[in-house]
Length: 141
Image (cartoon, rainbow, N blue to C red; front, top):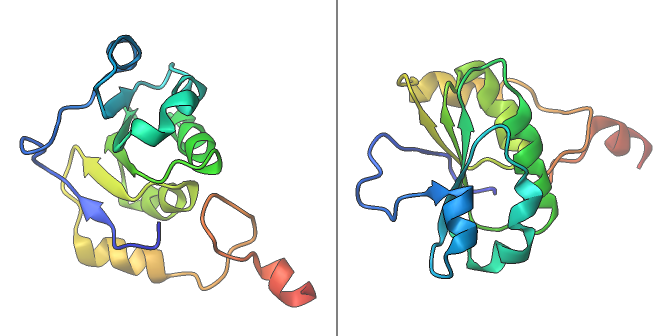
């Protein structure tokens, strides 16, 4: 998760992410797309075979994808975790902390603005799926 962020606009060279139902019915799919109303815990028995989990964000106000990402990362998923859809630059830092490492926004994001937003704060206050140590723990060791 410490790798550079990836922004995708054309996934034609990849195996397409199949729906959750299609994934559960197949034994050879390695990419799956989760919709906001689908439970990420259904993927837990298959984490070792997954290369990509694409999580849909149909609207920036819908935060269920954050929970799905954190469930997968905390269960040990090491593959690519992509936020796709209505992804705004203001959300990237929070998505990153939940475990997303690639993004496929509907509207292009300026890479310089994304990097600036990620570098804005030196410390965090809460634990998350990433390895960042919360500031309270740094203070109280």
